[in-house]
Structures are given as C-alpha cells and as structure tokens.
Image (cartoon, rainbow, N blue to C red):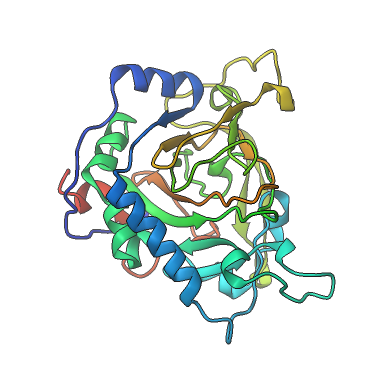
Length: 316
C-alpha cells in the first residue's frame, strides 16, 4: 500500500461518468470528455502556466532535458529524480544547438513542468483535487485513488518532441497495475501540433512487460517483468487483428477544456509538433492506494505521502 496524505476538501461539480461513457472506457481504454473544464478554470491554469514559464530562473538551472520513451533510461540526475514534491522545469532536447547552447527563449524551450503542481500550485490543486475528478475515479472502480504526480506538457511550436507508443503503468507501476491518466487540454490539440493517438482496446490484450525503476549508483532504467501484467479483474484477451502498426492508431484531436482519460495499459503516443502553435496540457495520474507501490519506482512520495483523492475532496 502506498503512503498518502490529504488536503482540505475542494468544492466543485461532482458529476461523474454516464453508463455509456463507462462502457466506452472499458471497450477502448480511453475516453474523451469535451468541455470538462469551465472557461474560468481553463484561463486560470493556462495563465498560471505562462506565468511560471516567464518567472523561472536560468541562473541555477541544470538545464535537464526530458526525453520520452526509451530515452528516459538516461533520466538519472537528481533534478529529475527528486522532483516528485517540487515544481521543476525540463527542457526540450531540440531547444539546444549542436554545441549545447540554448537558442530558444526559455518560455518556448520547456518540454514539461512537474511533478507536484497538484500539491504546490493552488490553481492546479483546485483543478485536481475536485469532487468531479473523485466522482470519475469512483466510476472507474477506484476504491482508494491517490494522486501521485502532475505536470504541464508544453509541446512547444516547431520543437515539441515525438512521444513513441507507451503504457503509463510502465512508469508508475503498482502491483497489480492501476494507473489512470487524467489529461486536460489547455489548448486545442490537433494533428499538426501533436495531439494524442490511441491503440483502442490495447489495454485488454497488451500487458505491462517492463517498468521504469531506480537502479544502483543513482541510475534509472527499465526492468523486464517475469510475465505481462494486467490490472485486477482484467485478463488478457486476443490481440486485435490490426496489430500495433501505425495505421491501427486512432487520432484524438480535442478542443481546449477537454478531458482525456487514459488507461495505464493502453498504448498511446503523440507526434512531433511541427506547427507554429503550442499544445499545452495539464495531466495528472491516479493509482489505486491499496496496491503495492514500492521503493524501486523512480517517483517517490514526500514524507507526507501521496494525495488521497476521496479524502481530499470529502468524498470518502
């Protein structure tokens, strides 16, 4: 069982999912909910993000770059590994020239901001620890959902990097797997600026085969699992006849304010942003607090533990 803490309740709408939405979730492994954020909250989160990008200092920054997918095995510096209870800024690789010099303005060079926005930034805390999100988690059959990380992913114009197909439970592993991503679009996400794509239904046949862990001497890497792992109650089914090829993925263009729910076993990806428009999103992840979350996971809780969503919203 993972350690957890609570915050005072945050009051907001408490409507969860309809039976039809739950059915789509179980079928596809993802669910798109338009207009999940009201205009005031959307403006607050986007404004807070832009202010943070303007205010952070380069003077003592280690210029840590973030690389998604297999490149994450090299994410072993302390700035990254100790970011679970902090707000830190990670650069796009392509914001630097061949000599390693930053050539983009810092506001246009950040890949993501993480990983404790839900804990340290009041606007993001309000948007995360809400009764609406608690109701959604309950409808997804969580018994004790805890929020363990949050981040703004920027997908900067021209340099926003490609994220290859992956499963979120690889990086936030519980035994059995239980991660679900809450992905809020702060700007329109389109095919040209790097929206998500999903391999619909892959959560039902693609088990988690490896996990991203802390290794010896402060390193990180991937550890193969003895058997592919599925969440409790979900048993492996026959793979889709379409396989895992590019043509099998479904494009997920969404408008600002939309919520995308992503199953931890679902294969999903996003392409490089080649446009002149950014694609800011706010995403946080929930795991089942009853499941084992061990010390080998790269992200470790602060002394007070992770945030219990039901208790934080008075929904327990």
